[in-house]
Length: 241
Image 1 (cartoon, rainbow, N blue to C red):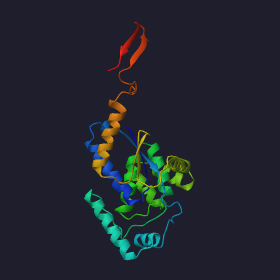
Image 2: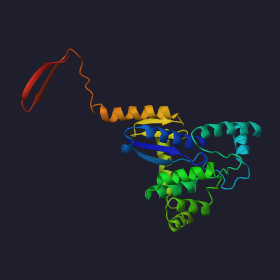
Image 3: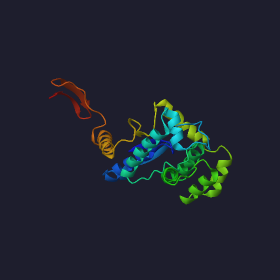
């Protein structure tokens, strides 16, 4: 089974959805047959790398609410994260542009460290309050998951892997992704939002059954009809039950 996940590193529900999916996969009896791929998605491609406002002020401005209400909203979101073992430090979080982080993640994926890099970037942003648009920070985080710091330094100086990020975003537009996280199973079934782990478990079982346990073709012959066919042993007429 192939699972593609469109997400952004500054999306609070993306980290929650990621962890809930992982919890469901831990219980899934066929998890050794699952391939997980993270896709790039920018919630705000025009976000500044060094915004002057904190996350509460940015949220308040975006949705036309008071800063106090934004703080309360973030606090409730933090409680959801804590329920599955995640720590969100909204007061010190540094909202930023994620394009370069996505480029590093695509490089990591090409070098067998895509899942590790995705997790490291999410933790760096939500828990450690690191500025994940800062090149020195990205280089350090990449080194922590086993990537070459020299190679990451080189790619950040130019536009390497930008085309990979844009390709993911174009694919998202083509299949109608309007928000993240967005999960696609076997390129046929989709789930949007940070669903409870129980929902992901149900989806995993359903997709596995649909794709692996049911016959590839299902007969649509009407009942009580005669079926005429030939094999290498001859031709026959049979009554359908």
